[in-house]
Amino acid sequence: MGEVTFVSRMTVKAGMEAEFVRLCSELARRVHASEPKDQTLFYKFFKLREPRRYAVIESFASETAEHAHMTSKALAELGPGIVACLDGEYVREYLDPFQA
Image (tube, rainbow, N blue to C red; front, side, top):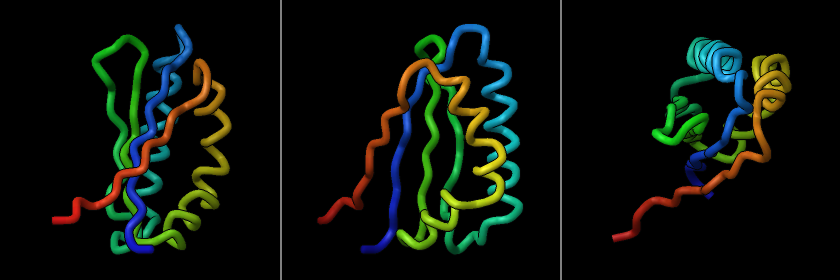
């Protein structure tokens, strides 16, 4: 399998948005500073237009690159705080390249 790309959508608990944004911003900063650009192809958080709704789009060169990200020191340190801000589970949707 080649590239692995997905969007994860989530709702944040009322009153936890500032902490969520702080943690996610720090995670994104660390990802961009430490993960190889040819392996972590895209990594960005977004505020959705619905109240307390956010998303992250992630794209990796391979499953190995995704695994390296998911087991990174940055995610181990910041992930639990991010999850604690969530109101319910996040939903991950995988995106496959369009085949012409």
